[in-house]
Length: 133
Image 1 (cartoon, one colour):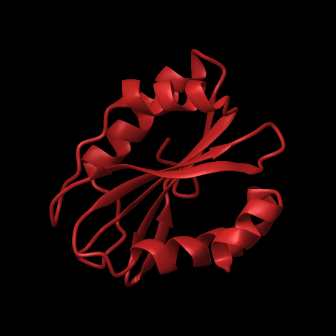
Image 2 (cartoon, helix red, strand yellow; image 1 turned 180 degrees about the vertical axis):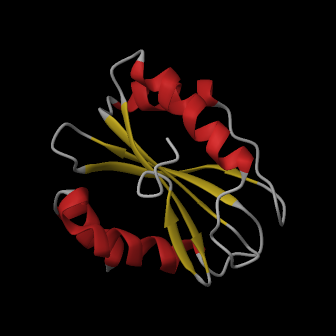
């Protein structure tokens, strides 16, 4: 139901619903999963795709593949999302670095990275809200 509701309206105007959907989808996962929410110009969800699945504490992410898929879908913006199976949503140095790399690569092609959200059983963190990119 949360997935359907997020598809019906502008994603960014219902941030609580997006966070609820992400918690349901990722908070209890035993391995890291990296998802991308692709948005159109009106911030409507085009697609929610799992880009990578990793181990208990790492998943590889490739900026080239993120931007390539956004271009294929005609996305104007992206929200990066991944979980921390440890339960602690505190961003790592690697999380911050990859977010900056993806945002820089995407910006060159007119695609905005709205945020990178980390989901854990103990809550969530927004790298944008933390001022980390």
